[in-house]
Length: 101
Image (cartoon, rainbow, N blue to C red; front, side, top):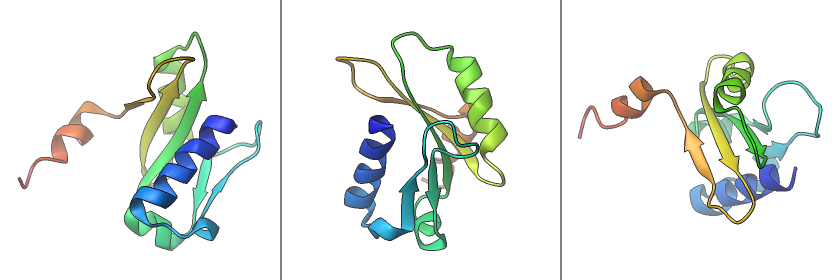
């Protein structure tokens, strides 16, 4: 859960999201790892799954993100000890980010 809270704090700081508009869910709770109010979704319209594990099946973790994403694009934040966090998104979605550039 510490990693979830770190991602939450980065979103609050970098995107100027009000702290009350984004919550870290408890471990074992179903659904998204970070729940967002509409104001937060306007700035970050993605569904977040966080994994902080030394050994991770990226495919299974991404499938979990997909299962919980609802109508939002799933994104997997992953981290292991002494390594930088990484993000996994669908390749077509990633490329579409640059479509109008």
